[in-house]
Image: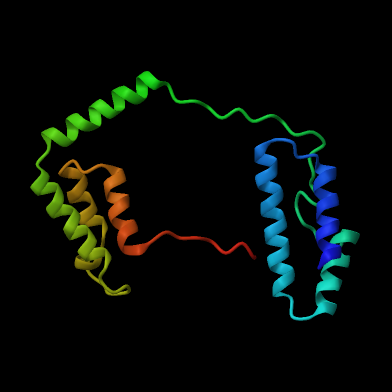
Length: 161
């Protein structure tokens, strides 16, 4: 395991990650590779995986293949404070002008239908109908997504293929 960590560290040094994005990627690569190695059933299998990575037989993108010669600096876009303020005012106005009871009722219906058992046929189990009613009552897309997140949670993909 230490040999793999050392090899990974050397590979990351060769990639010359200098900024915070590179650091995050380096840590993610380290974690993913360490998790895969930890999942290997024996020391012999771990050593074999490590050898395959070192030789290039097993491809790890950004570590032993498909590396960038130079990293382009990333400057994230900054929101315009004036546009942000205007959007917040529009949202406040929307919430003040709409019928809260109508929105709350539509959102409750959406949560009820979303929490129904899966696989049952019929429009009474289709979330699109209550979602449409909630949006027609002037619920925001964020509120609708939040209601669905409350019921279904958030999908987190597995990092292994």
